[in-house]
Length: 226
Image (cartoon, rainbow, N blue to C red; front, side, top):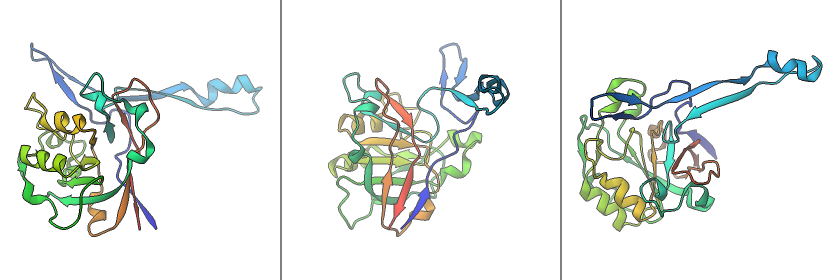
């Protein structure tokens, strides 16, 4: 047994999503990591015999490699804290989606024709993690409507991508988020390192902290290769 880390580093100033206001103003969301209490500041509390750092992180929860719960799309959907661990540790399969241009659609033909996809984590490797931290990362391929419908019909448990969004950000209807989260097919975005899992038998882990009233949450995504 071995493990493959599929998570981008959670770092100060890391790439996050952008929101453009009607006046054209663009706000980019990221994480801020800083000491809440430094070793030097804490030393006096322990008579100089020990010292500790306490770290403070400020972030909106859709940042880094993260999991979307149904509550992200639907006000009455289950939130991150409602999800069972068993729903987030699933047998996985990687789909080779490399070779598409920015804003290219991935069709149904990309899916494997052998094997049952029910209750599996289906992870799409566009090769877009190579662009992490660059402007190119924000112009990415995505799943076609027909592929979204097929994944729902196949009753997959989770869909993961190595892009910043499973949907085309130019489409306000967000069909992937709408269909998947309505069916409680969970979504993981900003994966990395999927190349290592081709032709491997593995379980995919997408477990966040048990945060209540929370729509999404960063995770330490990894695969257990058997």
